[in-house]
Length: 453
Figure (cartoon, rainbow, N blue to C red):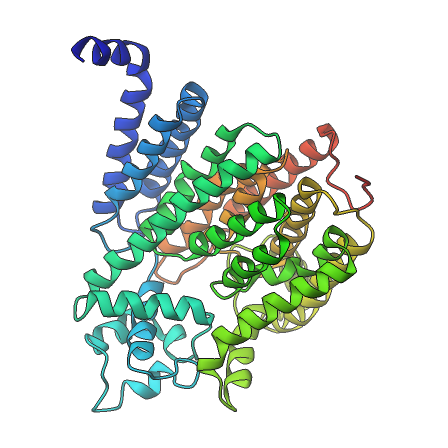
């Protein structure tokens, strides 16, 4: 045994050293970083990203080493509360509501906090910490997400940290599930299985999901599971995890029309019916006459009221300010146009592109989601993680670059007035646009609509 350990050390001492160094950076990120310290945040993130690239480069065939390293990096964040996001306070708030059979789609925190018999432990702290924007709106998280919030609230009891620990455990398990099904899907597509580490070791994934409790990883677990089932021709069974994915985050709804050519009309109808029935069953416990209006209104706010880290929108806004001087009117008009353009792009990729093969289908998904994010007025850093996953199964790696550059958007948190630096946002998007154009013109599998299988 000593000889084997000695030999292993000699062969892998550089990657082991890099993994230990990355662990130190993640520890510093988790325990000794305020999100207002942008320079420190940027330095730690950049260093972690560089080490991630080098670990994959040196040890891409050493699956056990990279898997263990990825798990350890996540466990470093296990006992800390998020330091880049306050969303988890609303998660725990909603979880306690659901655990006490109170509908989070019918009550806003601003009204509930005034009730003397409120059953939420640490209610005032959760209310004060979730922020005024969240406190005045109904919940926008789909029903399966609410169920997971409730489980975390029950497991955590009166302890906020207990609920945080429960959520982090869910997210880590989901990431391991993505690794498992993602690797199997890569093999089915005749791609190298090591490509899954572009997701599993990505610092944005580790920091934003395990570190800051965003549920994109749980959504993507069900989504990748569904893609794997599709790859082995079990389309009816795939519809169930696909529906569960939608009921964590609504984003996979975008891709439903793309299955028309992949499955054919008859199978597609059955596929959609299974998804619809599964989603309805999960929404039914929350249904009331006010539910649809409240939920639609809350989801609609993301199109017409919020703006953060936008690419095309900021460019249009800049031009509009020069000529009109009324940027506050633009977001409402722009928010009405974006859904229409998104639907148009989805229909184009549905009817003008052959999506019969899984790789082409995934590339179409990636194109649709990319165009949507390019147009969106709100692109939070953790949104890019979906593109990172899709990119694992295609030739395109611009999402990996975007996952590195998106950290520039956190500059806004270093300012008291939450003011974005449009110069940094421009650097982010120009870098992504340039690399995407380079990949399109240098790829054998062109990133265009009019492509045949």
